[in-house]
Image 1 (cartoon, one colour):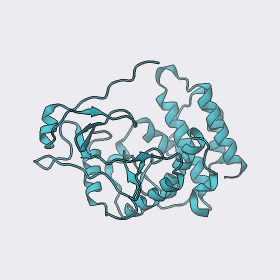
Image 2 (tube, helix red, strand yellow):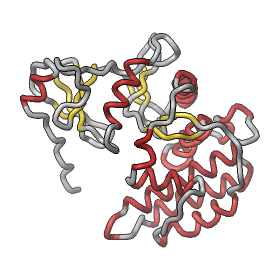
Image 3 (cartoon, rainbow, N blue to C red):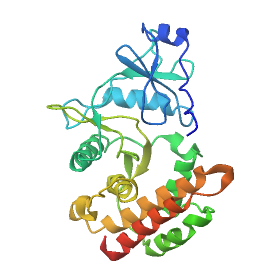
Image 4 (cartoon, rainbow, N blue to C red):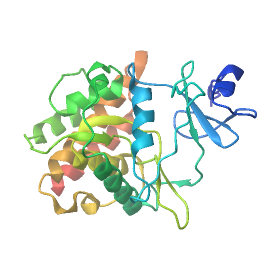
Length: 275
C-alpha cells in the first residue's frame, strides 16, 4: 500500500497569529489535512475566494443548545478568520458516525439545517469548480458531464428516474455522513462544513445515499425523508451527485473500478425497487 501523503503543517507565524502554542499533530480522518495544536484544530482554507471567511462568520453566529454543536472558530489578534491560508477552531472530541448512529446523524442534520434556514445564498457558490460542485449541478440538471465507463450504466438509469421536484433551497451541509461526532450526554458535533444551496431534504438524502453506497449494513431507504413524497427524487439526485463526483475525481486513469460500478448499480436497483 502506498504511503499516505503527510498533512501540511502550519508555519510558526500562523500559530503565533492565532495565539497557539504547541507542536502540530496531524489528525486522522477526512482528507488528512487537519492538524491539532493543543486545544485547537487547524486546516488549510479551501473553496472559492471568501468561502472560509464566510464559514467562520457563520459558525460564530450559530445558536447554542439547538440540538447540535459546531467547533468555535478562532480569529487572529487582528480579527482575521484566515491567516496565510489557514483556519483554526476549537478541538472537539467525539466518536464519528455514521455506523451505529444513523438516526443521530439524521437528527443532527435536521437541527443544523433548521438553524441555517434564514441564511442568504453566498455568492461564492456560483464560482466553485471542484468535482463536488460540478456534480451537484449535474444532479440538479444545471450542467452536463462525461462519465467514466464503469459508471455510465447506473448514471443513465438514475437520470431516467429523475423528475422535476419542488422544494425551497437553503444553505445545507452536503457531506454529513462521516462528519458528525458523538459524545455521551452531549449534542452531536458538526464538522468539515461543505456548503451547498439545496433543499434540506436533499442533504438528508445524501446521508442515506452514502449509506447505500459505502456503509454496511446500509440504512433502510425509509430511514430518511420522514415520509415526504419528494424523498425518492431527492435520493435519485443524491446518488447522481456522488456518482458524478467520483467520475470527476478518478483523474488520468479514467477508471472508477469495477467495485464502485457495482455499488452504484446496486444503489440504482434499490431506488428502482421502491425508494
